[in-house]
Image 1 (cartoon, rainbow, N blue to C red):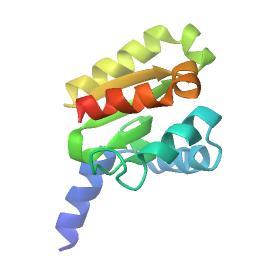
Image 2 (cartoon, one colour):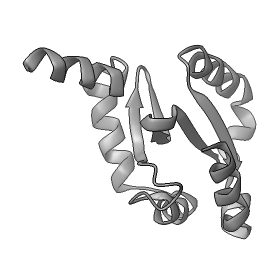
Image 3 (cartoon, rainbow, N blue to C red):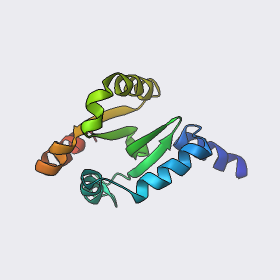
Length: 125
């Protein structure tokens, strides 16, 4: 039984270190307004009855939102991402190579047109 728990843990966290897990916990307590808005729309299986985690540790990364059931990562890009495009591309390539699909939305999309964002997520699911 302990062995199956270890497998499930590693599958969910993809080997995330305790340091990354600690940072994720801090980020969950300090979510941005767009993150809060989206979280309130996708939590509790509100979209296609799928379960999402927020600020989820995955390897060396922390995913804004993660749906294990659909291998879906949702990333919200604020202004800081304008200067981090190469990093974001490398991160997306890594996640894709792990079998995950990454959907990216800008802060403005979430704040100004949340229903369209939810529709796009629903289409993928």
